[in-house]
Image (cartoon, rainbow, N blue to C red):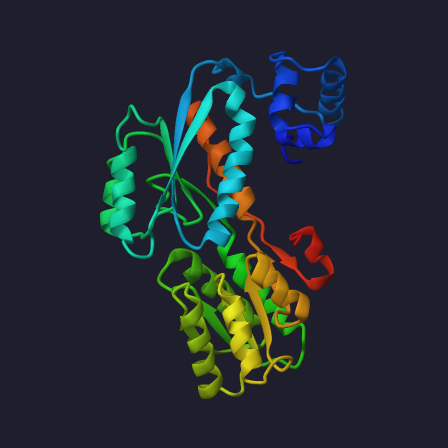
Length: 340
């Protein structure tokens, strides 16, 4: 059974996380009825407070967050989850400083500048980061940091630190199984973000393995470099060169561009597309039938878990890498994941 958090208690009692924290810890000015409602919710759920975190109350711990600036549709979800968890731990003295680096124009240089910003011990006590690369240079820079660190979204070398990511191979496997269920699909293509990046490489490996097991042919692979225009052009080239393709898996947020190309070529309904990430444009594509399904990677939960793991690191508690469960979103259950 998953551990009950103060976030769960707050939701059960229909109060803010900060209110639940104050009620459970006897701090702040809260009405008696509210305190009783929170206490009853905690009892129903079997909540057990983090005593180690309580001992840190008043001893401020600063967490640095270093994440990319693009694409905002996705990064904002990580930020929302980070904010959720920080509200939970604020009453225990935890604070955070978030810095977005330009991962398009400056790339690795901007990430390394961010590392330098947080490298000073007096600035932060721990660092959560999304690396721009997994090169030996990046690895060396990270190893120079003496503070606790954790990689978010991109799996880091486990000898350096733990990571919080979606289950990347499972995303690909789910996509392949979904396309196989149509029965008539044999030839498929994959449009990745960038196949040399760990998350997309593992998406592709998971897809290829499951596709082979289910009798699907992986006919073509293209890199979109997480760019909508590139994704549109690569889709057009794929359809021209491989007209037999009947299904496409898009392992990047660029599925709307792929759907636009298929529609413009008069192939809507003939080619099944499954993408990733739920946001306004993908939700619209799913609602109108251009997308057959979306794999939800729950970036918000990844953000929450990264903070919780970092708190454990700062408390010298044992931690291990976490892989968040991906979920299949179809038009019938879209309202659970996205509200216009």
